Length: 284
Image 1 (cartoon, rainbow, N blue to C red):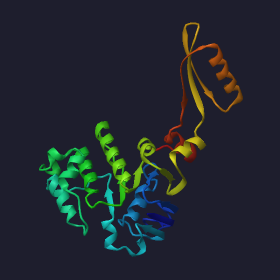
Image 2: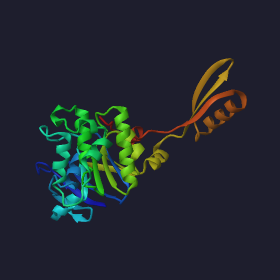
Image 3: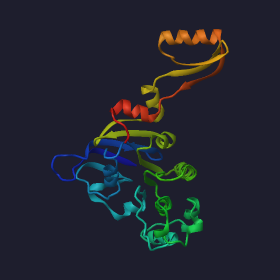
Image 4: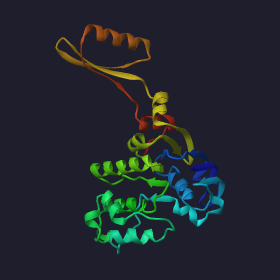
């Protein structure tokens, strides 16, 4: 669905690259996470893939189209939800979607259906300029589905949304992916990436550090720990022990055999912890 090989991009063409020798592939039907802090090269890569930035150097194929020779037909197959909403403020929510639908040469979805999906059906006739930031973000998200894309680019889809609305957005993404839509998710939010993505790429300073599934990364880089809570002389105690280190394994057996266990569960490393371990950088 997406093939990228040796992608480089310099904004000033001065030898300083925002994206340097980036290569990856996204398979049809998967949710692929492109993860990194601000300035890492996420948006630059995404803008090249969606035709917003001209391809300078490298080989890029999107939905079967070579980006060295972009054809208008490609835009019928992709959807894009931007982090910064760019809706028409003087148009109503419904007018925004209906206007955008006319730009495509394929069958489009009903605007009211989409507004209902994102919780804006009661605001269909309200001008977008009167919307809150979160409402504009939902409108932009709804607009990205208008042409029934088979490749869906999502840039921080839950940013600025309250937890309930964010959960609805994640459910929509899961449902569309279940229909076969391929998702390219750009984010610095490791929690949404962990929940949604089949594979993730860590990008820092314009370079990809690794690509793998969240589960494989946790198995490879996460410490295997058990947190056990037990009662000792009527006092509740808690210990964190490794399931690999021999001394810790012996201590765990000792606790299980000699004390009343209240709780015991494994601790899994988070994607954010793994990102910091791999790249040496945080996500801010």
